[in-house]
Image: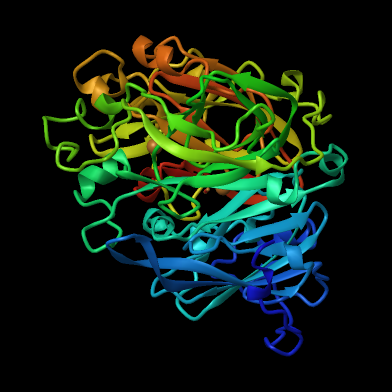
Length: 560
Ligand code: C2O
Ligand code: CU
Ligand code: CU
């Protein structure tokens, strides 16, 4: 809203050669035929003439320099957007930040994004949380090199909510996101519009990330190499919307919608108000909850989003309210207990310890200014998926997130294999399934997973056991994410979880609503119910600890 005129509006006809023809010019023409029978929406190396875009954006990834800390300027990457077509409010920059932009569209809009890669390495964009076709999903095998363009063309089918976009090249996603490549994709729809929720200056995105800087102000990424990678990056400072200044000046008597995204590479947060007041959450990854929830604190894993209601009616002018991180006893799993002391590098970096309290966001209450907005009893009328509709209700498709060969993070014993998909990763279009994602060794019905010959190698072995010794070093939280769809959480099993850890986080989960990312603790398994609709093809599911993902804790599932 503030900075719209930074975007140039151009007439795009003629600025880019309109190539005609095939959808099958993709780097690897997987399932072109089957997808052509789906919604007639394409993507890839060409613009399709018959795609009448409502919103048309040029999005460049380029090198940038950003002064984040006072000691110097960091070499960063940024997405820079220009609007070819669409309402002025479509693009909003995050001022002074390498992050952004915020793209705002309406459900039903046809969106074309011309992604131009101008960074000196391969990249591709993934639209995290969006229900789009294979070609529009940003598969790592579709990376483009410097100077190349990838055209996305899709219809926005998701409900109102905050989605996001980031690079998805295999092995380098973590570093590219770390350097600044991430933006927000906000969807609006009529259902939400009718609710009288806060809008404009009262609707505030808050991207939370952790970073580490050296004395010259440069970003430091994985100083201890492989050992840091095994754990995932953990920084020593919190950035809000890409900036070190975490203060928001808001109006007394204002009613706010804070849209939080945990955009960190691997860190989770246990968020609470320092006033001791509960958090009121009314939306999650895939949009509004049916009813809002109040929680004493909230556990927000990487890639997760929530809408937080903030009413400053009873606050005083000049009062300061803080959103803080509360201690979680996770440090042992992040290094201390994983190897002999020092080997994981935990001792040599100065990452913010999980088991400490630190500030996330500071809210300064200014002069009084009321806005008309309210939090209604019923927010969304979309009913969740029914367990009884699942074709595998009693035999969930099981995915074990763990470690193989001592130093490899795996899913069912496997790592990323390009376009490969295993028998037990193939599902049917227009079916509903239960997936059991497991981070704790044994599950009661691993029998549900009957494909592939890998099962004997894991799941029951001592490698993933819960008892001390080697068991501990195999267990870390895994923020699990599934592409292409939004699921509902059926249950969370905690039989094998460490009691200390559980006691510290148990009241911070939201099991309601539509989600695409969950924080799977060591010893926990979760059953998720999901439906495969509209698009056939390959889609990813993976750990959203970006270092784990880059090491290969990522697989395809195929809808056919
Ligand atoms: Cu946000 Cu496949 O990731
Ligand atoms: Cu995703
Ligand atoms: Cu992981």
